Length: 291
Ligand SMILES: [Zn+2]
Image 1: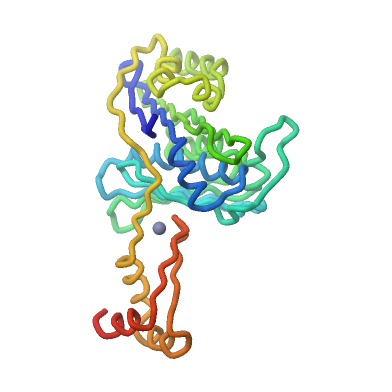
Image 2 (image 1 turned 90 degrees about the vertical axis):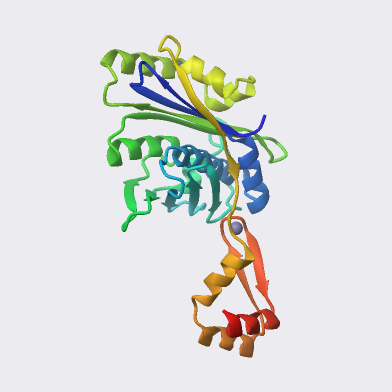
């Protein structure tokens, strides 16, 4: 099953629901960054949230970034998504490893610790929108829920899950976000709250073979869910040698001349996909002359 995000509404449009399966994209991130199991879970949950929140953006060129900074050994996570649900991201300390919790779970909270969660939306305006909340739980889903309530004033329920296999590969990954629109009745809200209490974890649902549509029907049973669209989502970095060249030019020609003199070459690193771009002497000279 390829990764996708299902967008739906329910209860006559007073509730909107996003369900995502993201196993392949989380696995791609794991392969790119060589993350430990707990950091695969931390990065995978944030990537899943980012992909869904990216798909909420209205315009083609809008970009959303989630920045998590914590005092735990994992350091933090940065994830960027566009409105087509292309998502990229990295963990500050991808190799950070922690023992399982007492309940036998990956200790994402312990890996991230206490800190902040910041959401930045570049909507093509002069100033990007920026909302920040303290990391309440460090488990990410609860923190995103808190962000929606505090910064966007949208009551939401967020579930994010990554199941890492014994060989460290990603067995399941996905999530859902349910949001109450201004017209949502008290009755609908309490029905959903009750339902969420009884719903299995997202990884359990995925592990039992449930599709996005199955999960939607489970969450919104009796609320006449309507599927609006289903869009693909993927781990995709938009870096390229040309882009890195432009970044290199911003340090100034004087600096480039210095590099040529001192080391004769330089390597630039893309944090998002872990790719290195090396520029040899000829390429640097070429940049000096033609850049
Ligand atoms: Zn890249």
